[in-house]
Image 1: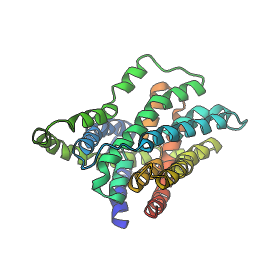
Image 2 (image 1 turned 90 degrees about the vertical axis):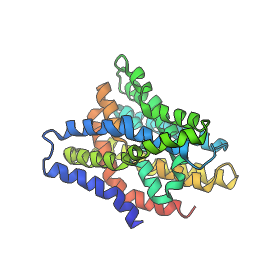
Image 3 (image 1 turned 180 degrees about the vertical axis):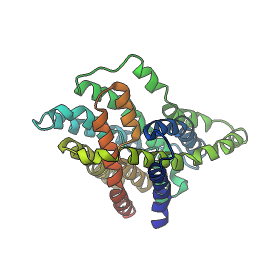
Length: 309
């Protein structure tokens, strides 16, 4: 577990050090630019390669396809309930997006690979894509709806154009291509995919440094959002996965992947979406920073738990 954790912490620490040394004149702008590479190239390549070249069968277990939808719906419902309270009534939108939008690609896939091994990357990529697709589809809408705003024109088109949404579809289609034609392409994409985790973690470390002041402004709504993301989400995933495994509806390996992915902190992309919608930017920035810092403690515990399923 220590070597696995170091593969996550070292590139993250490099990003923090880059901020401390002021290697970038504008750290926020640098994060935005650096993140475009993993978002548009490296992570789609990683997901596509994991699905197209992974030594696994496309899951036929109904629970594999249902669990992400049920999990996201439950998190949205809990955010809605928070919005009905006097203290959190105005914060339901940011809580919903922060709670639903886990860092399942940037951080989730490297964590799953570190804990469970490279052999599960194909299945993890597919499950990650389901969670990401549901979050992208519902999260920004709920942020706008429950914050009293509306999405700017073209937002839906830009979301649907994200390569990460289409990478699993292309990966599944590529499995139908003869191996002799598919493997050279996957081999060429492999180095790009391998670079996704380190680059994204470096950008995340730089983001944490740039936004470190946000930790001094945490309020009740921020604590709820972080708790929903890091405690409630993996708890719900575990509660759904354990009986599904017992009934034979889900494999133990898939249950482990689902719980690990559910316990990832709020993704940096959630902040980018909030900025694009001009709604809840500061709340999402605080959720990303606080949940990522807290994840350093939560993820090792979660890894210990899933290995005992």
